[in-house]
Amino acid sequence: MSFYQTLLSVAVAHSYNVSGFCPSLNFYPTDRTRALLANAGLLCQETIDGIRIVYDRDRIEALEMYALDKEEALSFDFWVSSSDPDFRSYTEPYTGAENEILYFDNMVTSGTGEQVISASKLVSDKDFRQPDSEELKDMLSQKDRLMPPEFVLRIFARNNKASLLKQWLGQPPTIYSIRFNSRQRYWKYYLLGKIVQADGTNNGFRIVDPENRVEFETTGQERLPNQSIAYTFRSKQRIPLYERYPYRFQLRQKSTTGETTVIPSLPVANVSQFGKDAMAEQEIIVSEIYINS
Image (cartoon, rainbow, N blue to C red; front, side, top):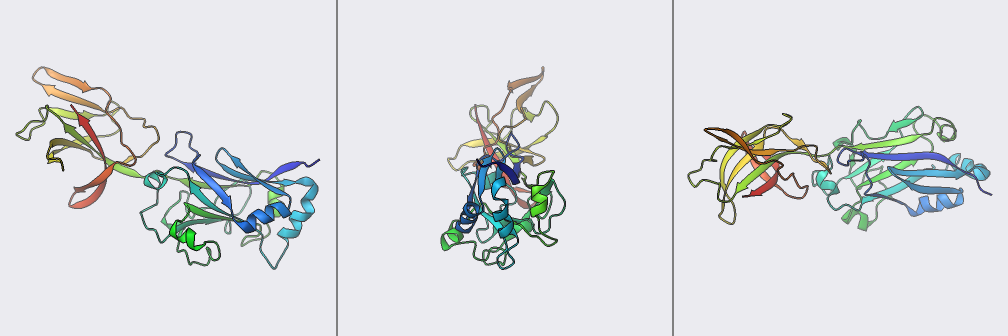
């Protein structure tokens, strides 16, 4: 009977998701890694936040043989893609550049327990590589270059310091950590319908955050492509994109007798609905939200 034990884990976090994990990611081992797992008596298992590689304690000699091979460095290599088509829309640091790929490895890690394998605490531009870079050499097919994965992951059994096998087999368990941050955008509300005044005034309307975390300013009247007139409001600060927002913005209206709440809970930003605006003579990206009244 085989007795399996965790060798190492990879955990991916994302601030966009309510859970803090990134459940849309799929890890695909390269052909070489798939053969290595089989020959060394290893299994790759999906976890709630990534993957773990487990070893058969009765076949530890086979694993040690591969780890000590000086002619071919032992590494577990994966292409990682997302089943969520909006992943890059809400994830930093994607900028739309198609000639760069995020790349992570454990070559400069040290110590036991959780180890961040991005260049900084959060994934950043520093983690991008050109497809023809040394790190990605022989990792990408022509198809991969045309339809690149979200990132490439390589876990080496020997890094810049020493062999890691003893560390992996010891305690505490080794967890390689990747943390993504959510994009941030200004929110721009478009107030449409009969309440919009033809003279360009907004009839005392304003958008309010009852918890005073986000401020909005009026940004005037705007004619839309369908020729309808909208009165607009824009947040004064950028707001992180979330799977589920912790905000409840309200549309309120001032009058001579006070202020009333017209809409107690406004719609929130959609990841895929955005446009461009100008602020201080600079172009910015805004989440566009339409209110029909």
